[in-house]
Image 1 (tube, helix red, strand yellow):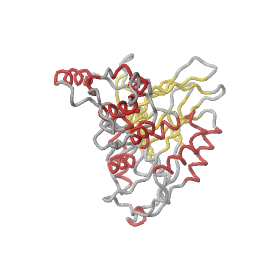
Image 2 (cartoon, rainbow, N blue to C red):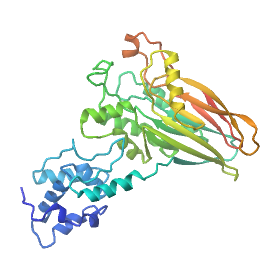
Image 3 (cartoon, rainbow, N blue to C red):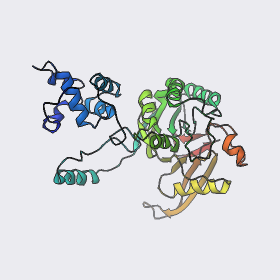
Length: 369
């Protein structure tokens, strides 16, 4: 194994951020063992985590860095190093002076969080736009209704005034403390990723973004490398990764018009494990109570629920007391009946998804189940 001839903290690292193999070329100048020295320095700097190093160098995946390290006998680790996660990829260097860390943390704490803007131009001739949430596919499980998912994707592809977003639980994962039986998984995360990319690729340009779910978070915890596979799927489809809960602002206009309608939307993958219809409704309404968004959506509990929420308020322009209407929806899943639901005597639930109608020429919100 080559010896490191220069301390990692003495390297001008920022000069090489995003420049791929420029750092290796720099190390090889007038040094016959420069590549080995580069491997050693990268391994030291990034705590043996190839994905973290790859992110810094500007590569999408960590395989190239991992191959370099293996060539010189370095292990590829990951448990305590930075990875793509549901919470982001930023991590501070623990070895920096306290005053530097405090300054960075103060700056970090002042950052603002913004909604994802979806600028939606609807083809001429349509006075409505259809928004489709896709949640709880749980790919890899023997009960995953891939046939129904494919049919939905074909409908989205054939519908000009339609867009979709992902609401989490793309993968299935059975943990040791879970209620599902092991042995129901007929495909692992790598196979599931390939299948989902193949299914969604034709409609990727109609995708607003992908959100993650509790099954992805369980995978992240079980692998102990802070890895959310939803990041990889979003990267495969070339769409934004939105997180577990997120705000979307839909800015909608017709192709042949300058009139714009704005819709404020909040989605959370969901919460709890309610076994009754009232419990699932309460879970939806609890999520809706955390936001002022006029459209609230969630998944997770594998049921189809729609509730109109009416709140009284004052029109600031006229001072008239008016009704403010909001729509809260829970989307069904793509998991057929059986396994845990059948053993717990839960009733069969609807399969597939819903579509939400957004008015284009005037403001209106409705759900089609």
